[in-house]
Image 1 (tube, rainbow, N blue to C red):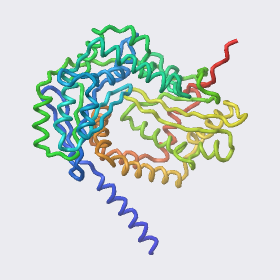
Image 2 (image 1 turned 180 degrees about the vertical axis):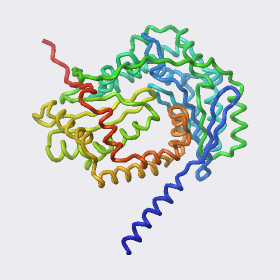
Image 3 (image 1 turned 45 degrees about the horizontal axis):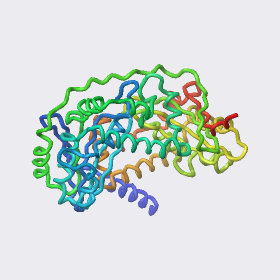
Length: 439
């Protein structure tokens, strides 16, 4: 009886904790099409001001890759009212931090300030949207910055190009085939007018969402938003049309050479559904089952028990149009890449052919609950999630309701989705190898 009471009490406590995590927000549109989301949390004197633009690496013409990532850097150069090179100085001298990042699908800028500098954050983001200075000297400066970033993070980093190696095999038509950072020859060849036209096309209020989260007063914040963003004119409505991919029906195998590594790797990947598709949530759970932690199936089998792998993992890389389900392994000792591949396939075959155990299923559910409780532990994290859920999932309230999707996933559904997407004939295999020595 005592044990039963403890279990019920634990369940109740978890339920109350999850309830307490509910994020309240308000959202609305300005006349110019800018979507606004406000989240008030007065527990700490901090506020995040962020803007997410619906533009990423896939938004490019052939021969002009990498523009969105380039603009992630370029739009810190300066504006008509912010002197060139002073952006970061203004932020830090007012007690704030800021950053930006770009994916294939969106670009995200944000500042975190003491709440008494909310107006400064709004002004700076409105300046970025309305008054950026896009001139040749700034383009030339940031071109060198991007080149150096590519060298450090990708070209000269061990295993830094493994995503490129996968994407160019999974996608033959869709722009996901090209790296988000782009090709340097494309940026070198682009004219100043092309950069200016790109900004005019994509960085407009009707292609963006503004999120203000933290220690705010809602009515006062709304007035400031109207004052700073309301006058910015809308851009043209965007017509998006990306090439589709034919289903993969036969496994392919290729090699990719990286001069920065000594230990080879085997990469295998499957094309999967994009953001918001229920199957993508199931694939996230499969990733957790296979490789989240040392007790996960692949790690325990290949690293601990059989000692065939130095490292092994699986990830469902979600994107807007298509996802990529990737499994990778680094061999230990004389283990061959084919041996690693066989071990990976053995665990995936079990998922296709058998229901996972009740205890493993319960562990997955517990991990989902824990991730949900921890996901909104900071105001800046909440701002990012609200923006992403609105823009890429078309459902801002997923910040509160997404856990119900994971709770509803069954063992039978896990088996069904593994059979749907993770078959041997639906994958690409890449031998990721040390660069051959020139003869």
